[in-house]
Amino acid sequence: MKATIVEIRGQRAVVLKEDGSFEKMKACNHSIGEVVTMKEKRNSGMGRFASMAAAALFAVLLGGGAYTYGLADYYVSVDVNPGIMLEVNRFDRVIGVEAVNEDGAEVLNELDIENRNITEVVTLTVDRIAELGYFEEEGGEILISALAKENEDAEETAEELEEAVQEEIEEDQLNTEVTSKVVGYEMVQAAREIEGMTPGKYNIIVNLLGIAPEHASEYADTSIKEIMKEVKAAREAEESEMEVEEEAVDQTDLVEEPSEDQEETPAKQQEKKLEKEERKTQKESEKALEKQLKEAEKATRKEASEKEREDRKNPADEKDKDTPEESERKSNGKVPGGLEKEENNGR
Image (cartoon, rainbow, N blue to C red; front, side):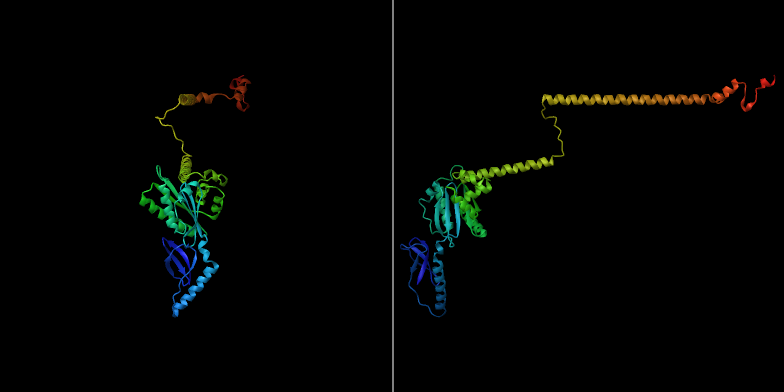
């Protein structure tokens, strides 16, 4: 019976047999993904039928590729300043490891992580980075990025790895923080074109820090800690600017008078003094004009009142006065009605 080696732990190996069952065997010089022949155990009845079905499934798996084990299903990158790229198959086994910079190569130098579970590999990598002193002094920042065909799978992987690393940090009392992100395939392609760049780091530089893709290479040697510092500073500046704008909008219709305790320049003080004197002069002029108008109105009323009293005092004089026509007739020796005066009648 044929079987495929799916895991190796020390001197023992775990194989997936044709009947769908798992079995342990000596590892010897075998490697993961290798197909080996095992002794077949006889089964009867339904057991034999199940074995035949499993064998058919195994044949399909083997013929169409039992080598699926060797195909990358998703990617994970680990960044501190050391940058490491990991290829993971559908069984969550690391099948490819790449150091994207010299610091990453130093970390991988003494690590045997291929064909191990991805969670174990990431925690071992963090431990090794800590041993090399990358989290000393002011601490550090760990960025874990996951990429899968389905974003939901990538998000789940990133969260699980972040939790595992966080537990490791707390257990070892490391002075560092961990962040997880999900990146797209385009980030992988773009990062591969820049020496010393991982997809996760590229994503932070371009999407969070706002650096143009053509200038991303300038940050290839910058640690995640320094990049995250810039990201936080940019966010704080943006928030501060928004607060200032909101406050300016709120104060648009308000004119704030300077307080008495507020210091003023000599020029400002002189300007205020002149304004005060000008307002005082204007008020005095208005008062003088108002006084003149009142006096003129009073004089007019007085004159009208005196005339009225005079008229009431001499009403007969006014009544006996001849009109101009009567005066003219009298001067001609005639009286009204064409009659002559009595004096003329006596003549």
